Length: 341
Image 1 (cartoon, rainbow, N blue to C red):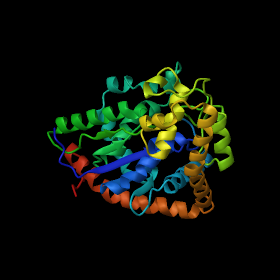
Image 2 (image 1 turned 90 degrees about the vertical axis):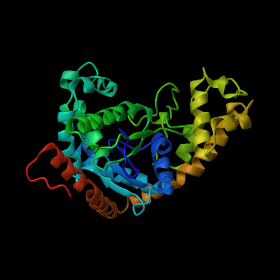
Image 3 (image 1 turned 135 degrees about the horizontal axis):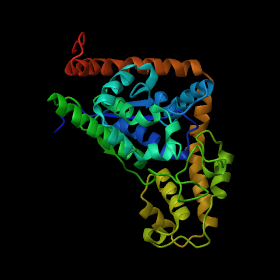
């Protein structure tokens, strides 16, 4: 079913811990660039998703504000984009209930992220952790978003969003929800750990040396790059030479993404170099790009009242789009009192 909807981008980040270089290169940098494409952009701190596992309330507030500061410091302009936290727009949760009734148990049972996060003790996982892909679908479709920038780990959830939209449209004989397209691109959409190139860079890794935090200062950034795990061999002549060298590939990818070039172009420039030469180059580049963002986040966090006002204004703007779409969905489903706007 072809969508005839106006192009609109939606994406979100969970405020369940600090932001890392992986969040910046895989998401925030691209979010800022999308503002220049002429498409409406909505970016969200998905705090309802965060509580699928228990969060300390004070920490959740702090992290939500810090993620907002991270968006702004990365170049997301709250005037050019709609920037808000999910819980301030009740339409997300309201549409999610409809989608809980559209999605099938078998679909959710196949979600690999639930299996990974629930682990062996799935009986003790929250219902929210199991059902959160239906809320994610509502996050996207309550704005009729046509494009969603996602990391590889969320691709399966976006496929579920497409399935829910198609089933809703089919069940009710409408062409109401768009079949959203994923946007997956860039040299470092998946940034790996600085201690283990086979694992994704993560805020939950016990070792702080495994990641560059967006709040790290210049000295910390440089130290972590210099101490990043590598191998003894020089950098190869071609990208294929990195196939069995995950740590080396990761550092080349990070260099490419930070410099706005392809990994191929980077390898051409640095072929034959030892890491003793390459790592200081990468450290200088990472400090040049990331230290100003860290400083700006620190400045923004000194006035959390202003961050709260930005989020509140963004939520009002988001609701002007979401409320009529939810009202139409209720009308389609047959809810008495629903007035399609």
